[in-house]
Image 1 (tube, rainbow, N blue to C red):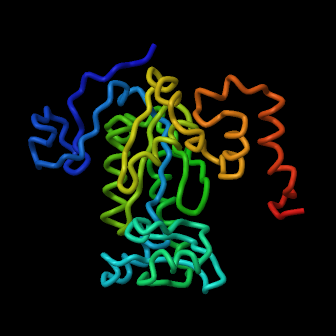
Image 2: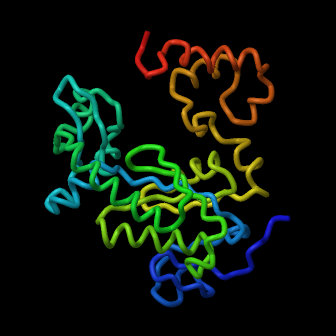
Image 3: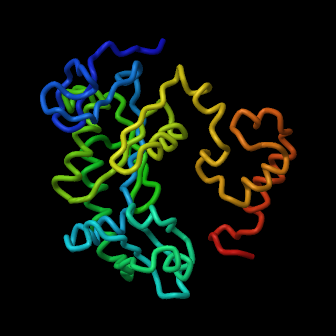
Length: 268
């Protein structure tokens, strides 16, 4: 049975859990409120650092704070990370650098410092492990966490613990994270992308099917542009279209990319 929350909204800025007339926290006036009927029944989270490489560079050089920053190689290289200012100009990760600079010619381009980013990533991971031993890293800047049974340790439910953790990352490390909370990893990953940056989104069990039905197929993690294009030719553009496709046809499309790669990830 799903436990429904009757608690008032949780303020993500001051931790208060009080009624919020007008959509703002009664204690600090913040509009960043977390409210969901299943909030206190969910414990699987996905945490993703926002524009990780660029955020670290902006942290270390405050003069870059309001400027479009691209972390990447030379003109023949690609974008490793673009800050959210640069993204408003259409710059995206993995975009060829010449296209990124054409879209945003006044961007500040910084060569990646992988050693520095690795140190920060390890700091974030260390703090994650203080929340729960059930940390599953996905990459240098993201991980899944299962906070089941941690209420006695943190004297708070998972949602409150994650709100406090996001603020701690900002205060102690100087970057921001986005959080997705759900009942499985698939939906937690989707949720963490819904309100970036500094987001905190929840997808509950009762709403999952209805929520996913009319979402574009690209919301599914790991489904890249080429696969989406092939699915579109079959008439599969929304998640609700998937049951109409045969397992064999889906298998051919989804396995085609995998068949072109070796186990080590390189192309054949």
